[in-house]
Image 1: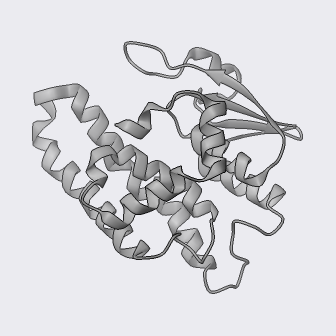
Image 2 (image 1 turned 180 degrees about the vertical axis):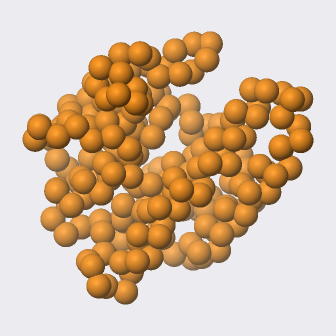
Image 3 (image 1 turned 90 degrees about the horizontal axis):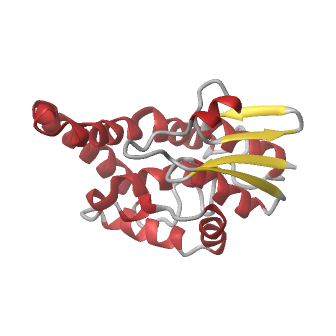
Amino acid sequence: MIKLHHLNNSRSQRILWLLEELGVPYEIAKYQRMSPIPLAPPELKNVHPLGKSPVIEDNGRTIAESGAIVEYLIDTYGKGRLKPGPGSADYWKYVEWMHFAEGSAMLPLLLALYASMLGDAAAPLKPRIDSEIANHLLYMDGALGRNDFFVGNSLSGVDIMLIFVCEAAGRRLEPYRNLMRYRDAIHARPAYRAALEKGGPYQLMSR
């Protein structure tokens, strides 16, 4: 059975959602962030050398990095769902968005989080960080348009990855009507709601 090492308020929430969408059996090992600085607890080092979450264990494999986990779960348990077939019109669009989620979109959002901890010391960086976040959100909003999903006409691994970007943006998302509509529709999905119940409080949603 799949075992998910789940850290509260982290990217592992997207893996819980994916598991619920796939309808496969799994178990959860829960970890809580420390305080006052919300770092992952040292126990995660016993699971993977990076000491981060998500990590899954399945069939003798230990896999870290949420993008890699999404790819593994879809390829192993998706039965042709949640990913365009190689050679299809949407395949490379899918690959591009999968890399965009962590390769481009999350970096300035993380920088904004760290800058907020530094206060006035980070003031010179703030305009550049803010402009990069706005650039990425505008790009996503335009690409989504009136569509319900980022690739094709149904849910895919791209949506599993990009919802975390929308949630991490918090109130910055409000000017982008397409993304707001998209976020709210994703949050209303039964599998998403079931993942929240199993994963515990997810305060990232209300940032």
